[in-house]
Image (cartoon, rainbow, N blue to C red; front, side, top):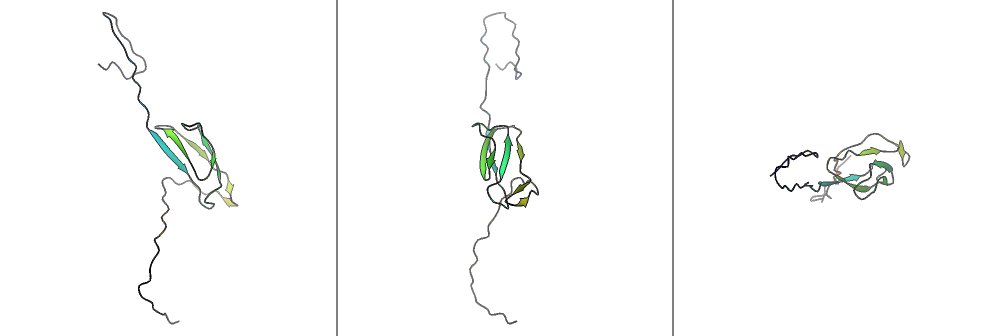
Length: 109
């Protein structure tokens, strides 16, 4: 029988009881940290440490965190001679597939 979801429980002993604290393994998520212009080599502060004890890193790198962890990232003001502009979340860079030429045409000036 579930007693409470609070970390504090009270039981009135009117007979023998066994009480069990139940723990769930938290979901773990990956945070991929990258940079653009430069595409690598930017040193980024990450706090707190991840589930493996890792923190800061040089792009590109990944860290794993328990669900609900609030993570702070601090980028340098400059990297590769370029000025910091913004952070982007969940951006996918798509490289267009190579195109084939099906017909050759000469365009006159």
